[in-house]
Image 1 (cartoon, rainbow, N blue to C red):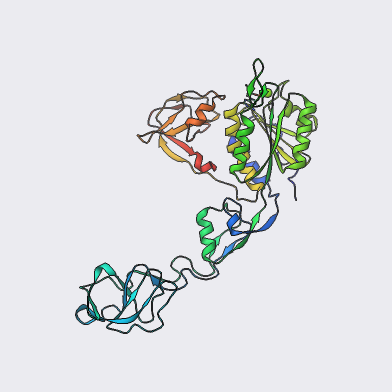
Image 2: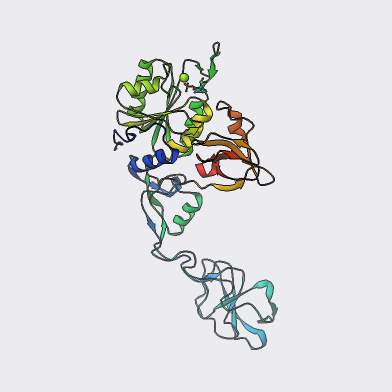
Length: 414
Ligand code: AMP
Ligand code: MG
């Protein structure tokens, strides 16, 4: 198993607030695939990262065949639209081994190989049958209702590429080529850690000022959605010894660690402090909201993404920064989520120079609405939202109807 470079999160000296796109460009340049390859059955391929290009072993469909139930014939060959019905039939998997001669027609069913001689199929609804003959007026164009060999895929074409995350339709395409085993990336192992003295576990009665840990289940689910195997590191108290121990267990058992809480530079920010003391930290002051600094570091070879504790900030920072980095570690192509340009259904003034992500959704009028509050602790807003409104650094005032970029959650793998 390979590891990322120790300085993969280093920033140029003197940098204070890094624009989000610069931070992403650095990650894109530095992250490397760390997982190996395994040979797996096609039945296990959905949602996994493909580790090889797959070429079409033959064209698909392999032979000209009928798209409908009807009659195969030679275009224009029946005198006055009358065709002599041949004995026999062509069905899917049971081809006709004779020849359809001019003036004759053969009963054919969907998926049957087009018999020799015939060039066109007429649907059964379009003909009238008389003893031993069929008749129709006009009829379809030459080649109608015939699925041509290779019209779907040509032999030798790349049908699936290394680095793509396979979907059910990709599985179907591989199956058309008779693939039953293929090379997949092993699943990335992602360890998830929450930190904070205030965090209670289910079954506990939270003490005064205590809250239940929301981030760990959320981040575990986010990592699992990316196809990772999740290692649960539990909750670490705000104690450097405990945090250090948790990071050690994470580096032992996983390829990457996602921690939340304690990531800024304050006295109670122990993830940040522990990484800093080990000389393994870079505080990424990324100019985004919700955000605050991310504490990034490498602990015993495992990259650590120290995300903010506020659940909305942890969610956004995971999706924007950690997810693409983890995807590359998992062997996938760097994802480039597409944004929709939609008219704003809200108004807002914002600070220039800062990228802002609002919880948004598309209203019945096609405008994108923003959640009623920007509070970064409000998980109800994440629940309400269907994506993130992505406001660029330069924007200062957004008025009703202004075009804004909307990043649907589906573009982020959710
Ligand atoms: P921190 O980043 O540790 O300063 O935490 C910022 C805020 O997020 C505080 O209000 C914490 O109580 C809250 N928080 C931190 N971790 C979690 C968590 N795992 N689940 C829910 N809230 C959290
Ligand atoms: Mg904390």
